[in-house]
Structure formats: structure tokens, C-alpha cells
Length: 98
Image 1 (cartoon, rainbow, N blue to C red):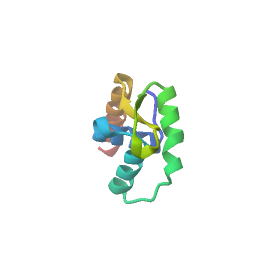
Image 2 (image 1 turned 90 degrees about the horizontal axis):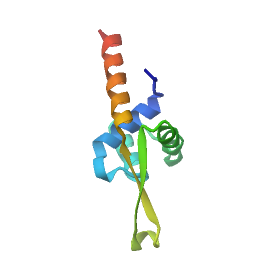
Image 3 (image 1 turned 45 degrees about the vertical axis):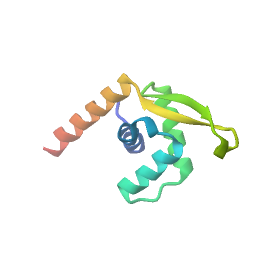
Image 4 (image 1 turned 90 degrees about the vertical axis):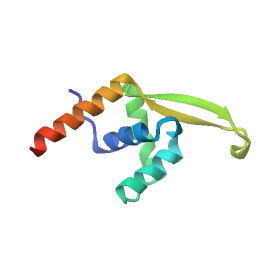
């Protein structure tokens, strides 16, 4: 089993929770809401890059939007490997906490 950093784990759970609405800003806002901690916007992008390289997350380019000056949002979704990693880490936590 590959262990995840705490920030990677939190980001994976947040992406799972947000579903189709998981993009940088929404991930950042949901993490702050769920943890009650202040996270900088930049603090989610390095773990997202690692998760993408590990193939736990896929990055999908959305359509350009007028309110963003024609720029596209990038959405994130869990891959089957990402879902498996979350289940493994959850099982590991449960064993440790028993």
C-alpha cells in the first residue's frame, strides 16, 4: 500500500465529496469549511500535482467561461486507483485506532 500525505488524503476525500464540482477554488473552500483551518490557495496545487502524477486523480479541462475572461477551469476526479488508495488508507486508520 502506498501511504498518502495528510494533505493528499484530505484533498482526495474532498474531490470525492465535491464530485463534478471539484476544481481548485471549490476544493480549497471545502477543505477550509471541513477542517476549520486556513489553507492557502497555493497549498492545494502541489498535492494535486503529486496525486495526478500518481494517477490517483485525473485533471479535466472545462469549457471557457465569460466570467473568467475566456479561461477554462480544470476539474479533478478520482481515478479507480485514487478510490482504492482512499479505501486502503481508511482501513489502515481503522486498524490503528482499534
